[in-house]
Amino acid sequence: MDWLRLWHDMPNDPKWRTIARVSGQPIALVQAMYIHLLVDASRNVTRGHVTVTKEDIASALDVTDDQIEAVFAAMQGRVIDGDKLTGWEGRQPKREDAGNPETGAKSAAQRKRDQRERERNGKAEKPKNDTSRSVTESHDRLEKIREEQDQEHTHTAQTKFSLHDAWEPDPTTFTAVLFRNGMANQTFEADQLLEFRSYWISRPDDLKTQAQWEHALAQQLKRQARTQQANGGSPNETGRRIAPSRTRNAHDILTDPDW
Image 1 (cartoon, rainbow, N blue to C red):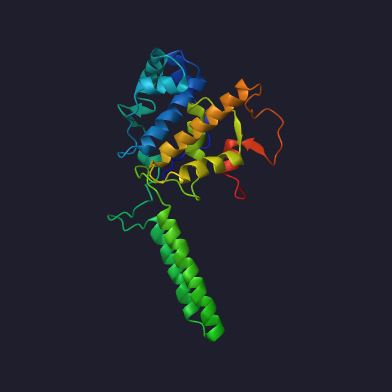
Image 2: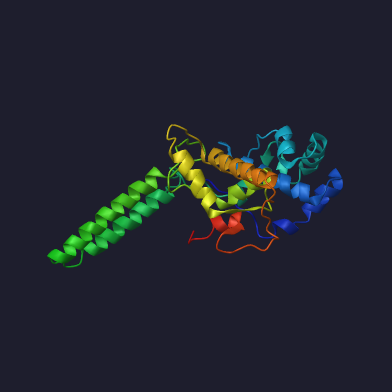
């Protein structure tokens, strides 16, 4: 899946104060809008260029079109030039879903295949008896299955696919999706992702991109939170004391290797 980089001192970058002062808008809105532009520029076929409309940003951030227009105008010449984010090539990596024919750089999938091939060749140089040969052959078959699964579940930003058991939302982009859906400070249970998978796996004819699946998951979580609130409960918030084995912050759940 696609991803993008953020620099460590981004929240404290002094240009946000400059843009906020020029536009007359809060720094929080300036930073949220910039993250929205980053995600859009990363997903576009021509990376680094922004195509999302100001009306869509205003709707996602729940502000007026005039506020977005003011921030966008103040960003020009500082963090954006026309429709392209400034310094994109220097800060953002090349996509790794394909090799670079000009430099000879290999894709991530090709590097993984090369590593497995080296490991197999290293084992082949050692003397083997019948038992070790059988173990090695079983290991090779397992590696081949893993490689096929890797290829099956590798999706580019524009690829549509049916949901599968190995699917997960990307922690970086899904955090932004939750933010745009007004759920930045809410948490959800791991079982809700399993329920989401189960529902859509039973509908293999429904095809969506990675971004569309993440949006669908966020919408389901939002509906469930509203239902819970309507029934007398309240949606979970990160400031509330919660049981660590059940409910946690969305980003923490997605980045937990044991989940």
